[in-house]
Structure formats: C-alpha cells, structure tokens
Image (cartoon, rainbow over all chains, first blue to last red; front, side, top):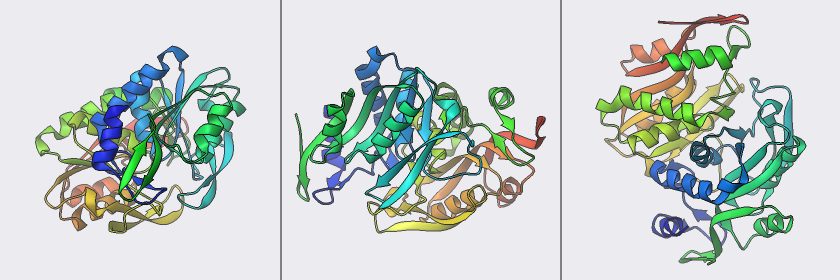
Length: 190
Length: 190
C-alpha cells in the first residue's frame, strides 16, 4: 500500500535497526481518515474470504480492527491482556511473550464471542516475531473457528514471524513489509 | 441516546448492583455500525466546541475514540497504561486507580501529541468513580490544553464521578446514565 509506505517515510522513523516509530498515526496518536483507508484496503484484500468476525488484541490493534470491522460490517473482538473481574469466567486463553514489554501474559477471549465454524480475520498493527499473532491463531483454533485471513499493517520482514506464518499455509497480507532499516533509512520489500 | 439505552437493555445485563455487562457491543466485542452512530452523536453534541483532538485511554476507549475522531476528522490520542520501551521519554503522566482491576497505574501520553491551547474532547466507555477521567483531565491541563468537552457512553449515576466532574464546571455529556440497577433491572435517568 503505497500511501502507507509514504506515510511511514514521511511521519515515521527508525529508532534503531529493530524499532520503527509510527506513533504519530498508528499506535499512540491515530489518524482516523488514514485508518479508514487501511480498513478499506483490508476489505479489498479479504472480501472473498466470507469473513464473519474480526479479531485483534488490545491495545493498538483496536483502532485498526475498528475500521476494518466497519468496512466488513461485522463485529470486532479484541483479546484482553489483563485479567479483569468483569471478564467472563469461560474464556479461550493463550500465553504470549511481548518483546516490546518483556513480559509473558495470558491473552483471553470470552467463549461467547468466537463460535465454531466462523471465518475469522485476524488484524494487528505489527508483525515481528509473531508471538501475539500465534496466540490469536491458537485462540481461533481452540474455538473450532477458521483463520480465514491475517491482515498486518507493518511487517518487519527481517524478523521470522511472517515467514513462519506463511509456511504454515495461512493467508497473510501485510500492507508494508520492511526489508531493513536503521537510523537514517527504511527500505521496503516490493 | 435511546438507541443506546435499548441496546443496553436488549444485549447487556446487570451482573450486580454495580457492574453492567455490555461486552457484546462496547468493550470486548465491538459493534462497529453502532459505534459509528455513537461517534455521530458525540459529534453532534460537541460540534460547536472547536475540537482539535480526541483523547481516550487504552484499551476499551480506543474503539469509541476511533469513531468519534473519524466524525470530527481530527486525531485520536490514547493514553497508555503500561510502560513500553518504545514510548517517548518525554510524557505527561498521571496516577490512576482502577476499581475494576484493583491496581494503581501511571497513565502516560507523549508530550508530542497534546499541544498548548488545543481544544481536547475526552471520551471513554464508562464513568463511575471518575479516576481514569480525572487522570486524563490532569494530562490535558499539564499540557496547557483545554478540556473542551467530555463524552461518556455509559455513566453510573449512582457513583460519584459524574457529579464531581460537573461540579468542577466541565461540559460532560453521557449518552446513557444508569440511575440504579440490580440483577433483574436497569433504570436510566431521563
């Protein structure tokens, strides 16, 4: 998605060879008009996959997921990272390690909100090592639902998550794949 | 907002005299078409307040905030509850106690994303004791910006947050105010 690559180059920057800052529009401040364009692009990419539900994980996946869900006119469900006394007792649960936060957490989805046989589109802002994504796939499959597609805004192509997921046969579409980066440059895959 | 009150009565339920479950459309599963209607309603209520920016707090405020921001065509910023090594060093910070999760946390917003003199509309899913909301107000005021309005989806009118905030002179609009509830009933204020 050229508009995304341009926005990353114009508004984002590489903090190091591993961390790209896009918090002006994607994961701290949100540009809602641009996010709706991202929603439309995922709708275009997965329109033939009979999507019943969108699944993401709190927190920064929720904005993207909201606009994707709006385009599909289907519900968004977001996995929760923290225990809340208000969450249902009956949940699907998976363990996820976050490199960004250096903690392992249980992610949970109430059993009420993913049903057997549903076609689920998983979306998230970033794909690097794929830990969060594998947790979401695990939850969909525990529910007996289908991972009908995976939509990622920015994939770090130099980290192993994307290749591992594609090798397992999932339909993974990333709107921008960073091949390499460092403090003065960001290079995308074609 | 009658459509919201009906949705709470039809899809939600009171778990006790203090906890109302609306996770089928508001804070775990999200109904994006309905959320866009909520966005339009807040836009109608605050259209004269020259809003420059929408501010909310992760996680369940992000979906509402996204649709409100889309209606205003202005950026959404969400305060972060957890430390991330990718967050800027320069942040506005406030301490917030969560009754739901029984923990005190620092909430933070990068100084880049709230500017002096901006008119900020704060939005959130719930208002009960007002702890999170007071943290967000504190952050806006630390930045020298104006709390131009506060939009809440569901206010628990029997808890003190709303009255305290209104008594301080803020323009607070709640789309549904629950006067009282218990396992078999939910009563709204008119």
